[in-house]
Every structure is written in structure tokens, then in C-alpha cells.
Image 1: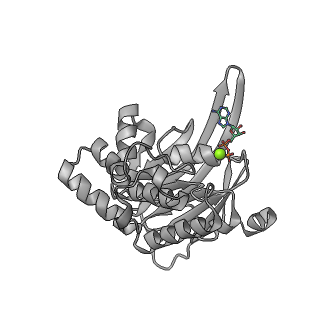
Image 2 (image 1 turned 90 degrees about the vertical axis):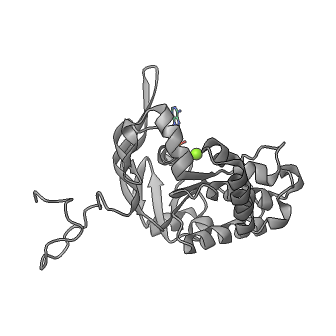
Image 3 (image 1 turned 180 degrees about the vertical axis):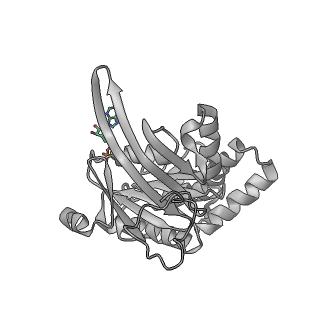
Amino acid sequence: MSDIGLHDTPPQGTPPQGTPPVRGSRNAVIELDRVGKVYRTGSIAVTALRGVSLSIEEGEYVAVIGPSGSGKSTLMHILGCLDTPTSGRYWLAGENVGVMSETQLAEVRNRRIGFVFQQFNLLASMTAWQNVELPLIYGGVPRAERKDRAMSALARVGLASRVNHRPGELSGGQQQRVAVARALVTEPDLILADEPTGNLDSVSAADVLRLMSELHEAGRTLVLITHDVEVASASQRVLGIRDGLVTENDERYAESLR
Ligand code: ADP
Ligand code: MG
């Protein structure tokens, strides 16, 4: 037992037993080890996550599904380095997030994560390409390269003909595709989407989910947070979250939400 975690495969002839969670895997983009989150307000403590251990490999498309209050937003904030756990450990692309300062966390967010939110979060006064180049400005990329990369990210999401439009001149589905282009433009290790279809009609929602599947096929790592079983079923792996605990492939639970 002393060498657990040092080898990727068990010694020859030894069958794998009890499938312990993979640790320190070279290709893990996300690795959570008994992550807990307790919110304290005065003398009141709310436990939002109770020891979540999970590993997400490069190129996986994972949906996290759970009802209101189950801990989805808390988990998303931790995965996105917008908040830190109160216990346990989190490695993002091999880096221990728990020991980082606010400045380091901001830098990791910009460099490693692309966010897609339910409300799109585009700047209304800026054109599509200006919105998409923003993370590159924060990342210190030179102007000419920024524009080129923003243009190709917009072409990637099928909006080459809309680059000079402002959000108000685009449909909801197109705005969300701009947001996906903005998430892609930094070539992040992880794309984190929080209810990305929550504000869309069913046709635009299907469009955005198709785009997510294309990104997955192109080798991107995606984590999609949702309360919607149909949306979750677009992914390759479904995690259920309930009362601050995550369970793998919880089919009965998904069924119960129908
Ligand atoms: P979900 O996104 O699945 O609806 P949340 O992660 O927002 O769930 O919340 C999980 C639990 O943590 C809930 O009981 C919620 O009331 C509590 N909670 C969330 N954020 C805070 C906070 N900032 N302060 C205190 N309690 C919180
Ligand atoms: Mg929430």
C-alpha cells in the first residue's frame, strides 16, 4: 500500500481493486481531493460541499446536474477559481489552487479557464470582436495578434459575418456564441459553462449544445453545470450533485428529475 499514487497502473498480475479515485494523473485537468466548503455568516455555518473528490481528464465533456441548493454554484466557483475550498485540495492542470494569492488566482482564471454564463455577460458598448479580445488584453497579448485571434474564434463559432455587431444587434443564441468565442480565445485548459442554455429558446439552446459537442470533438475539456436532464445528456459523462455530495453517473437521480 505504501506506493499508492506513485504508479499509473497496478503492478503486473494485480487486478485493480475497489477503483480508488485517480490521483496525480498526468492528464487530469481537474483534481479535487475531499473538497469541502462551509459558508459562515456570524454564528451560522452552512455546509455547501461535504468532501467532493473527483478527477476530470483532458478532453472530457462532463455535465454536473443537481437541483437548486445542491451546491452547483459553489462547486462552479471553486472549479473556476472564483472562490477557494475551506477544506480539501484542488489541483487545476497540476497546480495547487489552495495555496494561491488573489492575484495568482486571477492570473490562473485568465490563463486556464474560459467561462460561459447563463446571462452571456457581454459588454453592451463593444462589438463582438472587442468582447472576444478582452481576455487577451488582460493576458497582455499584442493588439494585432488579439484581433486575429478574436476573428478566428468568432469564425469558429459561425459568426464571421457578425464581428462588428454589438450584443444588442444579435439574437440570444448569437450572443451566447460570442461568449463561447470569448471563452475559447485564450486556448484555456478548461471551459466552464454555468447553465449556458438557461436563457435561450430551444432552437438556440440546441445550437449552443451542438457547438459544445464540436468543441469536445476538437479535444477541449468542458464542464457544464445544469439542472436540466436534456442539457446534461449532451455530455459524455454525467455527475450528480445532491446536498453537497457528487456522485458518478447517477441515472436514477436523472430519471427522478424528469
Ligand atoms: P445551487 O447552485 O445548486 O443552487 P449553491 O451552491 O448556490 O447551490 O448553494 C448550496 C448551499 O449553500 C445552499 O444551502 C445555499 O443556501 C448555501 N450558500 C450558497 N452561497 C452562500 C453564501 N454566500 N453564504 C451562505 N450560504 C450560502
Ligand atoms: Mg446556483
